[in-house]
Image 1 (cartoon, rainbow, N blue to C red):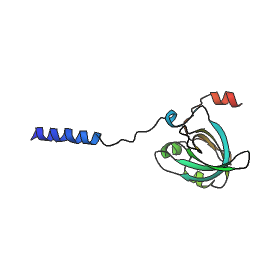
Image 2: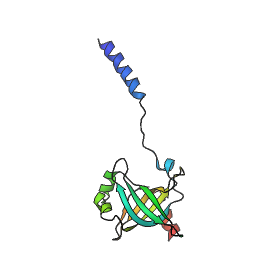
Image 3: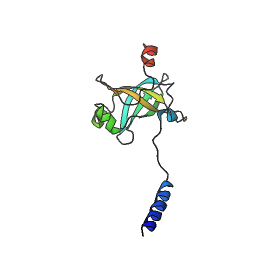
Length: 141
């Protein structure tokens, strides 16, 4: 009886191992940390979900053309621990915000990972991985 239970357990483990697993990705797999830039635009929405929250922003280029961007952030729990919540985004929809973000590598246009986010009242939050470290302060100042 014990042997049968052991065999069944082993078979179950093998079958379970065959189910595709959705592993978390590393930053460098998906985003280009060498092309990060400051962007300013109008906050148009937020997707407050795990494993990452997202915010949407309309950005106007030098020619006046508006493009809609989607920015990936930390997890909802990490955002809350950092002092920002969904209501902060909802209160600022339609207002001008700024972000420091790194574009997607995949060629997906208008998608990036946000590092920081600044609301109209001047509050700035770390909302993503800071991939540039101290290089940004030295290069941009």
